[in-house]
Length: 160
Image: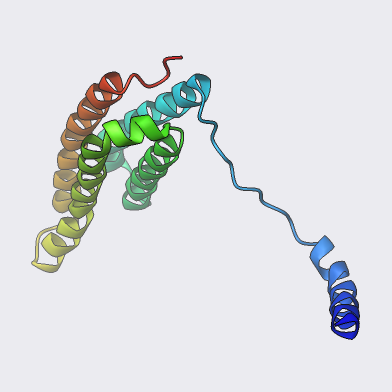
């Protein structure tokens, strides 16, 4: 046993120099506190706002518009994931249906990207298909954030 432990230590000592040069990224662990919930709530709202803004302005960009909309959507999805991790077990239990519907709503929003690709593959001009996708995402994300606000109010998010 001591020999195995000794070999493990020797093996690690040789690799420590390589590990020391690597950047360390610690995952952000949100707090299950009223302040943590309020911060996560504000972040979801801000990300939804950024997505809606991007869907309004992206059709005017010459390049990279699709990638910008996709990135903003992914940031909204991640903000919602982080938000749910700030909820207490009581809130998770009480809001299970609402949270599942909100998550399903994000899945539906994501289908707009697949529909864009299908439209282009079917021969629709990419500019027109992109504008349609942005209009759908803009309106649908407005409905989604409205439902998000209703659900968070019922769950008393951010209340002590």
